[in-house]
Length: 72
Image (cartoon, rainbow, N blue to C red):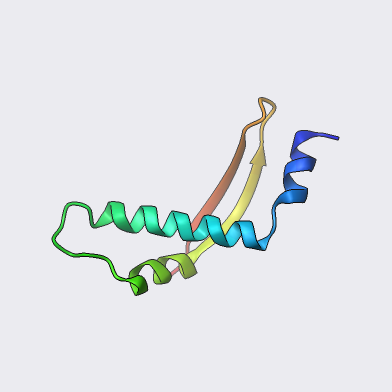
């Protein structure tokens, strides 16, 4: 079985949700890192709800790339 097949079989909505949460936190914290504004939970939730997984790419050297888009 190819590594991509093994990986995709373990990928599920619970993992995707954790990933979306982590991405939203990282991006939100980065955006506000140079300001006096302290992000609140709704800032994170808003971005998390706007992120959408658009593509999963597998490469020969065992690299997997997930492409997300921000939808307004």
